[in-house]
Image (cartoon, rainbow, N blue to C red; front, top):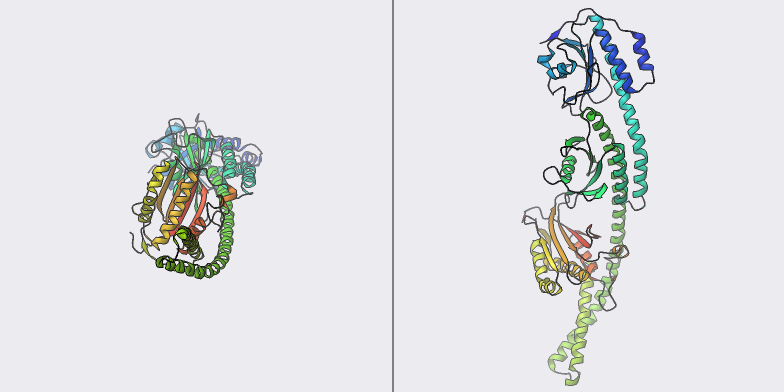
Length: 554
């Protein structure tokens, strides 16, 4: 097998070993001193230390003595003879290195070596190979075993130093992120601070942070050190969005080729409750530094993930508190409105009934008939407002059955098609043809969606674009409806009150302020949610989620 029993040889200088370990010299100098002691202990000519990555896939040279420049290529393939060595065990002498691990033999320029696994506190496996022509003695191998323990201490010390440096750099970056995100618990400003800081830690050419949008189910660019001009500049299977999406599915950082000159270090951001996104760091990383870079990247990913998730959790709490307050306010207002509506409905129906009866009997003189017709129309309009109030308050009974949202939207858009043509508005439909059905009242849902579409149409005015999209939000088990318009968007002062009853931005007489309030009431009655925001490209975006009927897919 190439493994031979050792014979007596060599002697270790205890004083030199103690002096090397107790000195304050940099870790690189300490490792070189230990390499020289290892060579002297077995009467060798060269030595090399190599480490496997966190996944145990391949071993690369990290330091050496008497071998010239460190090799860049992988020295130890997975499953080789060296993987059978146990950390803390006695070194072994391998006499046929070229047959067992030819890459190591080539680096040491010898066919035989004393090899031992290094024991340390870190998660990575390490090995040292000392090239020597003659088999070392038992005492020499014992001395080498002692030096191997010192290598473990040096590796752990170097790892601790690197972690300390990473944390020293991370601390002000995370503080800057918190300061930027804390006022509004909005990630946007904080992500740019994180992106620039991480870029400086790794001295990279370019860095970007990608956020997982659970609603759209795709990766969105959150921040970049050079803006979003190169968002997807390199198309094909290795574009940045694709790399970020692949990173999200992994648990550990990874280094991959981006193009012929640049590598991408991708760091997944994982929280306790959700997948958050990924960091992409672009640089020509040396292969010899891969293990250290991946280890530092793992710590950066953990710290950044924790900071980002804390902001998201606070944001979720604030949104939930706001929704609860709105729900309580709307519930109280709904009860009040329902009482008024019922009180108004009786006299209005009486007025309409008597007017209709008198009109049928021809009781009105001809000169006043136009005025009486106008009175009837206005009374009927008042009755319609009362019916709207009853819908808003949830007092109107409804019959729920399985409904195709795509079909309801098709009818809504057909009703507005002529108006779209007259205004020069282009309507784009992006319907998921495999969309599950929902349980609901078709006329109510049609009225709610019609109101949102009309709101978008009025916001545009003329010559614009409306996009109506349906998707299945599998995580929420809901049908998602997004209605986007290319209008001016929603001012912040309006967005907070947009679903309040009687709130309107229109001139007096132009609107009652009940349209979107009614939409909110209908969606809530169906167990759904509605939100209004401004799209990244400008314009307003209304997002509606309705519970899907998953008993049978429609």
